[in-house]
Structure formats: structure tokens, C-alpha cells
Amino acid sequence: MKRAVPVVVLSIAGLVPVWRYEPSLGAATSTPEAAPTPSASAGSASGTVVKGTTIRTEKGPVEVQVTFDGDRITAVRMLQQPNHPQTTAAVPKLVAETLTAQSADIDTVSGATITSEAYKESLQAAIDAKGA
Amino acid sequence: MGFPVSLRVDDEDVPVARAADAVFAWLREVDARFSPFRADSEVSRYDRGDLERHQLSDDLVEVLDLCEHYRLATGGAFDVRLPGRGLDPCAVVKGWSVQRAADLLTAAGAQRFVLNAGGDVVVSGGPWRVGVRHPEHADKLCTVLELTDAAVATSARYERGNHILDARTGHPATGLLAMTVVTPTLTEADAVATAAFAMGAEGIGWAASLPGCEVFAVDGEGRVLRTGGFPAVRGSTAAA
Image 1 (cartoon, rainbow over the protein chains, first blue to last red):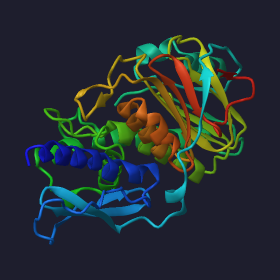
Image 2: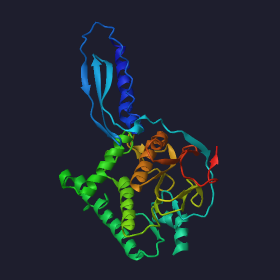
Image 3: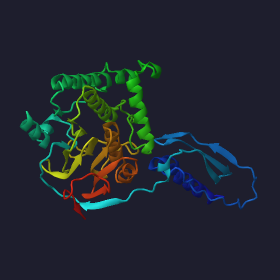
Image 4: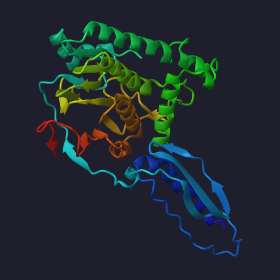
């Protein structure tokens, strides 16, 4: 019984980011896999059902129900899931590039220009000075 | 919440001075109402408990709802309530308020303009060429975008150092050098750029997976990862 404890902790720790994170990736339709392995010990067959908190995502509320058999998770079910085509979209493919430093004729500059000191030295200040 | 604001309006038949006055009056109003650095702001009064949730303005409720949305969406990496610190919704207020300012310009009849608030940009009626500041060289660009109607926001740690915290650890987010996000509104672009930056490297895939969101990220090793639809001018980026 002692050996089972870290396993349970791990499965719960592993599931938490799945509940919290996966909906925001737009993949909420994929129910987290929970091994529905029958209990090896001769424990009671009735599990404890725990309803998770509802997480609001951009696509709608997500609510998960977890069934425990003793310390073991036997089922995870989505009670509420967003009905949105985006939820089935795959994670987008990213293009890798090398970072280049360039100059170009531009109308404005995006960058973290928060302080007025940095603004004075910025390309945006040069553009503004030209237009004024 | 001070930041430099640049406005260019190219419509000839629009009373530009009046439209610009309205924009700057709104941004001053936002500072008075939402700055956590002003003791009499609505944000400070709410944080102190002088105001109850049901007494808040619709605007602040909208801002706080956005903050909560991004806190949940980032697994807690983005949080405007850090332990030991007061409520600081600046990261969301900035994009939200500048988008409102752009909407004021549109309502005043402006169709072709560029509004740049501290490096966060709303453009209308392009084509406009928007450069993205190089994370290591203030006088260089790392890519150039061509946009018609869009918003661009960049979060980076080159200026104020490591000022964006990963709320999951309480430590500065250092996984990325810079994160640029292009979306239809600055409300979303700014919040997503900041939230993804707080998440670190995993924020790239997170932001890229959001619908209508194009991403150009420079990771901790100086590598660029961008979405295929990122609207860069051809030739302004280099394949790895």
C-alpha cells in the first residue's frame, strides 16, 4: 500500500495541468486518459466521485469529474466542454528562423518601449520627429 | 502607467486635433481610474476593500474578467494578484485602453491611422509597415510586418530588465527574450504577449494555438519561432 501513494500523487499532479492547460490549447475535446484498471485489491467497488471546479476558457466552460477508487483514479469525465470547432484543431506548426538585425523603411515600431528615456533613443522617436 | 504615445492620422477630412485630444483625454482618465500607483484610483480603492465587487464600474469588471481569463488560460503564470503585492492589472489595462482609444478614432471618422502606445500598436486602413524592435539592438529591427487593420504587441525584457514575473514561481520570466503577437485587437495582443512571456518557452505554443493569433517569439537562446501566418514582409526574416 505504501508504494501506491507516490503513484497517486503523480497521477493527480499530472492531471492538474491537463485540466487547466489543455482547454486553453483548444484541445478540450480530448478527455484526459485515466487508466481504468480494475482495483487489484479487494476493495469496495463503489468509487468516490469528485466534481472539479469549472474552468472558464475562451471557448467556454470546462468541468471535469474524477472518480476515485480508494486512492486510485478510475475515471475522468468531462461534464462540460466547449462546443467549438477550434477544440479539435491541432497545435500549430511553428517555423524556426535565425534572428536577424536589419534596418528598413517603416511607419512605426512595436517593442517594449515603456520608459520615456528609452523612447528618446528609439526608432519610434526618430519616426515621430520626422513626421512632426 | 506612463508610456509614450504616438499618433498618426492620415485622413484629410477628419478633425485630427480634436480626435487626438479625445484619445489623450481617455488615456489620462484610464490612468486616474486604473493606476495601482494612485491611492484614489478605483483599482486601489477596490484593492484596499473600500469598494465591493458589486460597486465596481463596468469597465473595471471587464478588465478584471480579462485578467482572470488569462490567469486560468496560462495555468496561473499570468496573475495580476501576486503574493505580497497589490492588485496590478496594468498588463491588461494597457492593451484594453489603447484599443478603446483606437475605437474612439474610428468613431470620429478616422480610417487610416497608426496609434503606438509604448510599443503596442493599432493600425487602421493600411498598408502600414510595422517594424519589430530587435531584442538586443535598440536601433535595429528583427522583422517587418505589413498590416492593414490589426494590432501588434511586444513583450520583452530588454528595457526594464526582468519585470514580467511568472506567478507560478514568483520569479522573473526569463524563458523568452521577446514575444510579439498580432491579433485583430490590442486588448488581446497585449494580454497574450504578456501572458505568453510570463509562461516562458511553453508560452510560444500556447499563444500560437489561439485562434486568429500570429506569433513571433525569440527564445532564451536567440532563436526565432514564428507561426506560418505571421504577416512578415517577404525577405524580412531568414530561414534557420
